[in-house]
Image (cartoon, rainbow, N blue to C red):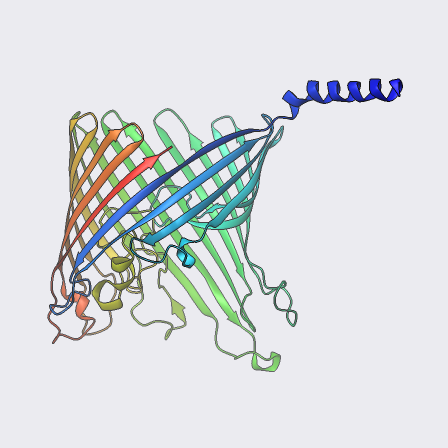
Length: 422
């Protein structure tokens, strides 16, 4: 009995000594935010009603750090975009556990494996956010960082037992050079899409970008060029026999800003190509990315912040962001603005933008309109921020969608947000 007691005490002592080594540190971060929206004449028609509501979101991210080499990151949202006054037990009110991935800092480089943020690379132009299942490898060679990514976008084998390899896989290779006053990167992406029966799509993307500073002057630019084709199986193989459909689309952005101390000014130009005849010429230039979810220079025309404007502006055409449906005809956007910081924790701004479609069908107008945005950002406390936007769109005749008998009504939108971050 004494022997077992001694062995038990020795085991307890061993576990006690090992506990600090085995302990896992947990770091928590996140936010709770409330947003308010108001839109007048969301469909740009005189008879439409105004739209006003508030929504909210609670987000929690946790990093479980095993040691300096290994960690696991998780994130969930609760009450995500839940509208005030709706049933809190509805689908939107449920907890959305959207990210879980491991990080391994190996001697040869860092591996990140699991479900994580997908989409943003380079500057924010044409970027959009989603959750992607990825394997990332990152390594540094002096001032050069190399990032290689494999992403399983769609997996068909787990549900469709009659066909093999009905998948979409994405591959990314990015080089990023960092120096004192410049960051420059070059990304190359390849998509192999076999989700549909009897057709295969293979697309390529070249994405160079830069950010640089010359004293108070800052410049940034980005190009997004996509090409490839969709190949249809011949009739003899059970396919449609349709001719191949080519993809050729380009987008680019150049922006300059100048810091005057308490104030700053900026100006820029953005473009993404359009296609006014669909696939009738066996070539599709439609740029389905638009300006991207993250490029929020103009609240009404280019932001996805308000779903009403993003998806339904102009009676269903949508704005120029990724999820809007007005991206088929492309856009040319000139914009500029100024901001002033009267107090350390308060910033006021004005942005003006003019937009036209790139290509439209015969008989259509290409004038999208001129937008004016007033912005406010107030850091009430270190972790509490209030922001507000008042936006007005002098809508152009492009919103007639070819029907010149339609009277277009201008619109304005109000937005505010209170966010507590921790």
